[in-house]
Amino acid sequence: MKIIISNQSELPIYAQIREQIKEQILNGQIPEGETLPSIRQLAKEVGVSVITTTRAYSELEAEGFIAAMQGKGSVVLPTDNQLLREQYLLRIEEGLSTAIETARVMGMPKEELKDIFDNLLET
Image (cartoon, rainbow, N blue to C red; front, side):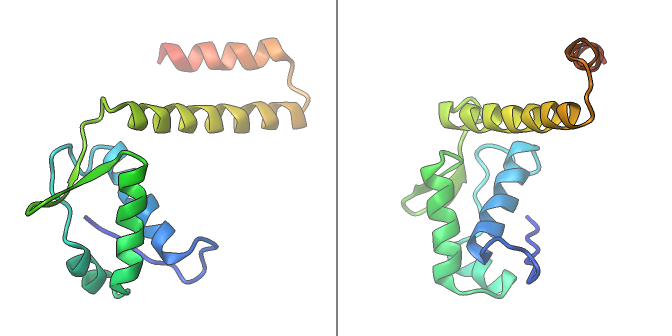
């Protein structure tokens, strides 16, 4: 697992950690059932406080990406998890909203946008 902290990011450090772990889970780099590094270990690797990594893990758990298991640490939950499905749907909606807004700004007709969408679905 690779986490890169940016001092130029508008996101707080805990959110950067959370988002990077979430992305790695969603794209399969961290598979379900895998145990994440301990909170202390990740804090040491990234060079942040234990409080920061604790908050990142707590939010990932609240969002349904991981579960803290007594004696095992934090484990990645199965991707068929309902909360994880909601995260996927949110990403789809955000992407489509961005595309629609861009099409509106450039005055693209609705039919042309639908054609692009249909073509992308076929590939």
